[in-house]
Length: 266
Ligand code: ADP
Image (cartoon, rainbow, N blue to C red; front, side, top):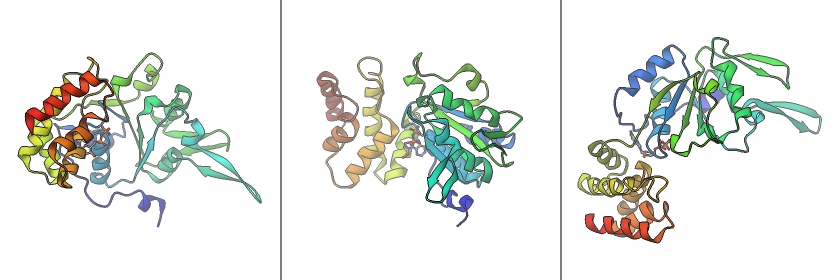
């Protein structure tokens, strides 16, 4: 199977739009403009990118960024072998060669000296210099770059350089509004809509505590987990405690407040 086939998304990912982001992404892709998707964790950023790759029929190469990541992890490196050395393309280079959408998830986690390797790919040059190999890769005409980040985690130490930000167009994502979020959870899991609406109400109670002892609210992802546990036979109260509350707080007061919010719904 070719690399391009390997990274292709075959079945339509379930994605419910929050607004006109699908059309706008298509236009950005049409102009090959790099796209940044901002928003809290678990609100649908990655699902959106998967859906767009499917809709545009492009292979998708996803890289989960972390602080130990180096430019070589993105671009590639020489490997030592019995007979000598062999160059191995990194995911960014592969994407540029085969015309994939390269999705750098949580880009701010990467150090700034790593992030700058994307610069020459994001302007009119559309090239990727492989310094160690002495090769200049011209990006395939279908190549596009998408990054995500969570502005909530932003700090002085962890932010994108203004010169990086200015290369991108951007979407501001948030948790879907109430009725839509309940529909999403119902569609994703098969749990009855009424129960999903209750789950969403618990999430709203938690999201009001953000900044008051909770770093992040209960995300759509966690609501999907709770619904899956209920579908497996867990009681709603157990499922909510296990999927919604225990993962996000170690604080006894906040835990009790959220447990009360659960008991008020189920
Ligand atoms: P993020 O990348 O923002 O951290 P994800 O895209 O992984 O979050 O979303 C987490 C989960 O929430 C998905 O796996 C999916 O089940 C659900 N989800 C969130 N938003 C949507 C949406 N608009 N349509 C369908 N599913 C969604």
